[in-house]
Image (cartoon, rainbow, N blue to C red; front, top):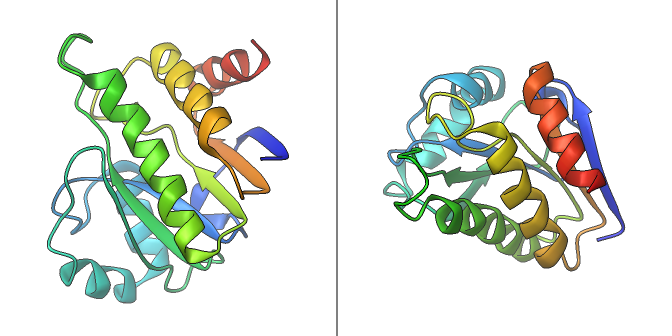
Length: 165
């Protein structure tokens, strides 16, 4: 990976090869980033998601990006925070690793991630940022740009700190 970027913004407006969706296991839409992606991308994303049969926590699957400026949406299911002793760091790392694997399979050279599991799943941003940035640095072979597109100052600050450390 040649470029790791930490930015504040709206993931649904990113002009990249693939954006990563923090999805639930049904892949049929939800709140937060997931809901925003489905609303902005239109019905084509949901139509493809219905054919995928859901997704396990820590795994990732791709669909069209519909009306979004990206080419693909990579849906990954992050862990619900249960205090840190229920395999959450390993599952969160797997989300990032599997998303990068899927990106490579698609030929995606630019990938934008949200702060997976940091919303309603309750993963503390400072802990998630270390896992996310570390995993991306270790596994983003054949990807030119990985951009973390973050909403909210606390999350941005946590990822910026992890990227600079």
